[in-house]
Image 1: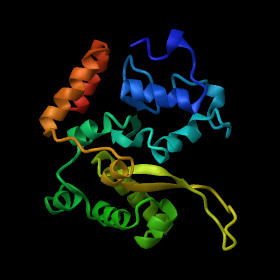
Image 2: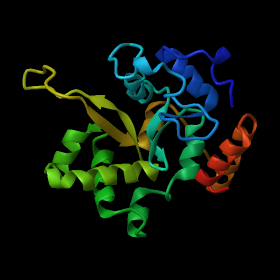
Image 3: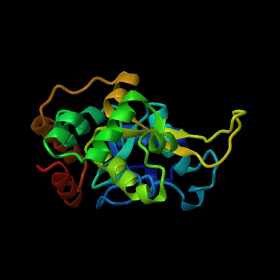
Image 4: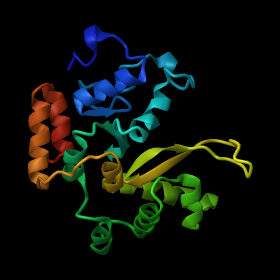
Length: 230
């Protein structure tokens, strides 16, 4: 797959990156798929963490906030951007079960993940600091379990990263590092006017593979076949 950018040029703007996501459907943050682009591979390394308008690290949370792409650790617990057009299919293809509560009752979702999911569902767009406080997981000893449960929910397609929120003091002034925020996948689709797919898990996977076969190499297809269990 060598035609992801015109004439092999590097992407240097948010709009160009959003257009690429729309064209590809799925774009991982890092280079983890064979013969397939990533946000990392199509942008100049010098722009990363530059805290400028050309910084892809800043773009990654603008995409979901502006409805340009769903963002989360959806594939092998790695960060991926999915276009609004493709997300309903990916949601159906990779979702662990019909809903988080059923998965918890069936033993497919951990108790910590289920409890955090309920808090996110109540307060859509909740940031990490507040979520840990609400869940009584503010201690250093709780961080590992918290992080694992949040990734578990993304891998199950129940939540997405909705952006970041700045820490502010009592006067409303920025005070400290920004914190990742989360919302349910269903809410992200609803807020951005995206209709859920009516396809079964099997049919959603088949449709995704049909689209990917149009432009992907054998190595790339083999990777996606494992992801979508085709």
